[in-house]
Length: 477
Image 1: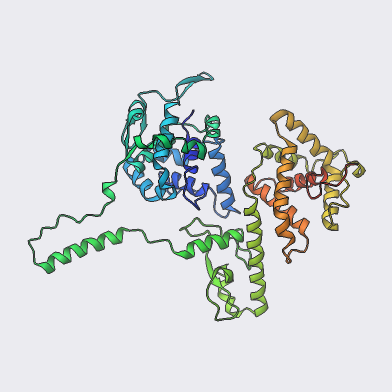
Image 2: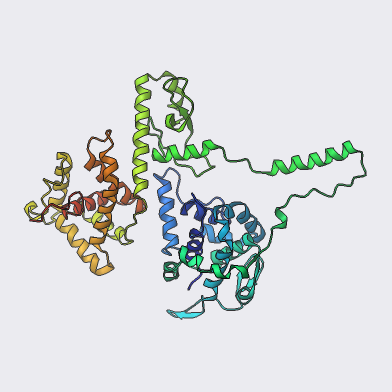
């Protein structure tokens, strides 16, 4: 087994609290040493999806932690990192699995044995300092039974961030899941969790040789000073803002100006204002009538808008929310890593001259598959020129990198079937097949880090012609 950020995150992901997503947990870990680190750049479209993609690659051991994280980790104060874990990480985990988490890490570390791989030594020696908050070495950890949980988690994380790469744990993460975690249930009695004494509240040593009034004032002053140090609670509107801007792809819903999508508790890129469009005017403020508009141009003129303009804005909000809901529905379907290589190749050839054309009679007849004339013509026009070339690319990459076209097509078909009922039952969607196809394109585009949108459109059209989408009964001629 290998201890790396991927295996560390895999353990915590298997033990996260309800309603905590992977990217939220990953982000909290990285911010323990690099509080200003961002997965995305200012103004990027769909940053929430990009954060999900980066988290997934880190979890699968497909990329290393960035230098913006590892460099500050080397100079971070271990005690401050431990306090951060106590205040910001423990709440993201299922507290009933604390002992199992400790045992899982002990197991991974114990089995991360030194060995030579490609002329380089990998693994953890017995005298390696493995927990950097308390200075525990591997040999000592093997017999340790008492743990201050947040301090232990922080110490292991600091070792990972400063001493390991994240490329050698792929086999390890395959074995880490909830079943692996609960396999330690029979051993939890051997682990004792130490209470955090520093977390308890205690008054300073104020001598009571003063008058009662003066003594009381000293105590009150101390309490007030402590309260001032507390961070203000995140207001509910922060969460609403994230939702509204995520649904609108980070844009002002009226003019389309880029606002960005903030992380919870942080402001977006542009100036925004949450406006409640009430119909009737005495309607209460709620998510259903809330929109995020730019504060420079659109928010100030809401009071001057006609009833029809307000209705149009609310309809736009509904469409954005529906689209986001559909994308969320299929977000769990993950495509092979090699799809990015396929898209890159397709993107390169899109505008190449002299491509061998395709006789449409040789392809899947889509007259009975596609009911929307515009969509049918669009797919046929693209595939008449590109089908043979794309098919050749897929065939070649199947041999070179193991890309499985049939598996990819099957996943896309599963996604389309998941969307089918909801889209068709939505009376506001005039062209269900085109709507589903655009959702599949958007989902694929997001999963590859918003690259090669043109190639995403081509590859989905290719799958339609291969009969992987929309109608299993269409016949290959």
